[in-house]
Image (cartoon, rainbow, N blue to C red; front, side):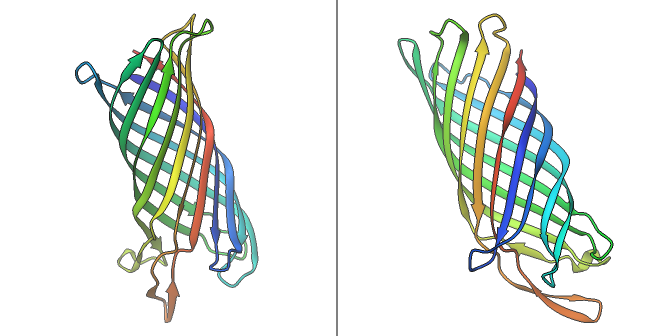
Length: 241
């Protein structure tokens, strides 16, 4: 069992069909997580993890009318992940290939300004993929050292857009599938083998969504979610029990 905290730099941007950056959201976000990693026989293992992170970041973009806009966006990110893999050791080196499924929630609240309204969007998607971790325990300064490389497919992405004050008029847009990867370096100091310290980087993207015709007051609008790219890089610190 692991219980820990994380702090990462969040970088998100949306792009037009021509590749122009429409808006960016950047900033530091703290969080917490809990994980359970049981052994399943002599060569198999599993892992279940849940995490929560929340903070405000900087928004630099434009309004729907194309007017430059700078404000803040409050972020809430929740994830649930399951992994299943095997382990083979040769001397001091162990290889741990795995398959992974991750469900991600992201609640994005763009704050209002003196000339623009706020906008809330709730994102939901799956990340399906796999990877391999190479681990060693032969170093003098670390009881364990693991390099984890993974790739995944972002799929079944949905965005619920809160337009106006009528929850029955909140359209749900279906994002186009994308790809992503993760890299993590984790180690435990020799003096504190129950302490886990990780540096990680993850990046992924989505293609643009479908277009929906919605009504806002007396007006009808066509809306869609642009293509987007996201990344996180940060540190995780946990205690292992």
